[in-house]
Image (cartoon, rainbow, N blue to C red; front, side, top):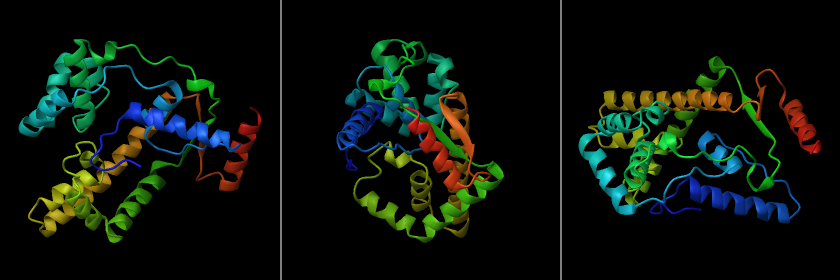
Length: 248
């Protein structure tokens, strides 16, 4: 586990994930990687992206600049420096904006010009990848219900506790979906309108993330096999995956 005051990035994830995979394999078991962050899954399969190590002092200055001028201003700066990469993210991707500007300052290169990881399986593992999905007209109401359930189960109390433990100082965690909207609400006058806006923006951000997941996994075809779990019984889905694995 990672403490709240610790930084965490895709390179560290790649290292820890592969350590876990090796440990699981050493026990004769099969590692099952479940997730929704396509960027991290891509790094696990193909290796982490190239680029210099983080520079804490430069990162701090960029974060202060973003706090002072806003994410939109730094996103515009990134668009001037690297329009190709900027087109792949939005001004809401605060961490990616800062990391891209950090790379540009340190290397004097555009992020879009850096060499990409080779399109081969990392560590020679034979990954069998599946994207379990359902139509958006079914998925989005489930996302809204999940957000409501999180709030009812004490999500705001969790955020308040994490604030005491240093959540705001962690620029990555504090910008995560849900936490960002909760922090905005807790820093507001907390009127009924503020509450309504918190719930609405929490759900909107969650649905938008799901939409981006669809886009990412679509780009990763044919590596990921798609199966609609609203039209396929889960026992059948499990059998499909098992049969695919047994062909290794």
